[in-house]
Amino acid sequence: MRRGGTFQARTQQTATWLVAGSRPLAALSDGALVSAAGVWATLLTGTLILAGTAFALWASPVRHLADMPATLSRSPG
Image (cartoon, rainbow, N blue to C red; front, side):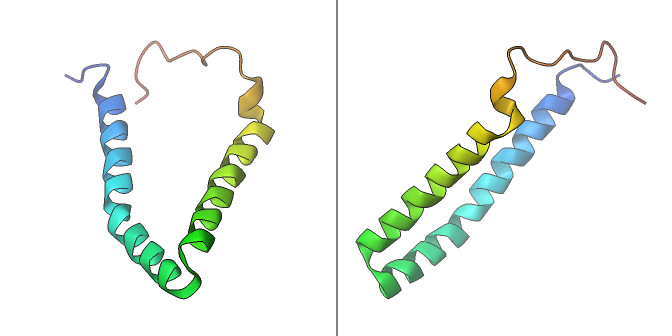
């Protein structure tokens, strides 16, 4: 028998695994960018990427959500 929180726990663990697994690749690309362009250019690039994702979220329909969507009363399938 499945518990209600099992799917949420698996989803959270998958997201954590993806983020943690991408860190070595991010470190490698950051090191290459620092070597090629310098520290300040790398920091500026990271800041612009972060600001761009924040702007994309702000411009999306997520901004207009006032309440969390309702959950299903039972699991599908």
